[in-house]
Length: 152
Image 1 (tube, rainbow, N blue to C red):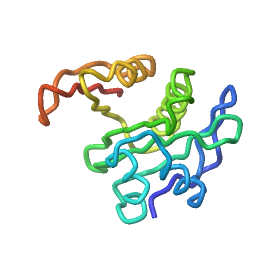
Image 2: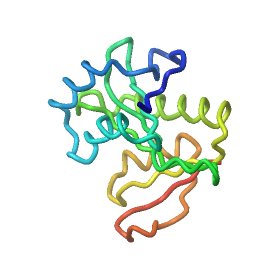
Image 3: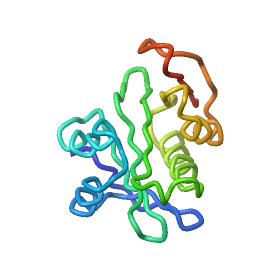
Image 4: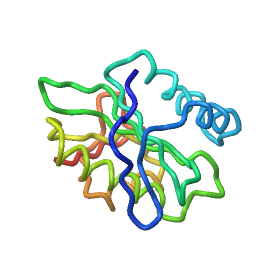
């Protein structure tokens, strides 16, 4: 199982923590996410290159942040972040959660580089990456419809 098992980390009511599996599964069934975005929780059970964090606002689970495609030799990982419901988006929760994960991961693990890949049209995701100190590095090998950001 590849779930974050450390102590909860909180700032201004937003926390990253070990997810409660039953709560995540219930929320994912009603989440305003694509099937790809909801599949990460199940993948974290079987894939040790995924590290899954629950995201809460005032102790209410609202999203997920995950590190995937962890490359221990290169000390890099891809990062994904999703807020489950539209009504919780646009309030800075994603930015706060990603910021907490970056501080924890880059400060306390062997990882030295995080990469976020998002759709060119996904302005909200791009803004979150930029607010968290990620720098645009251009289109990834997956295609020009995507844009990659890195933080070291």
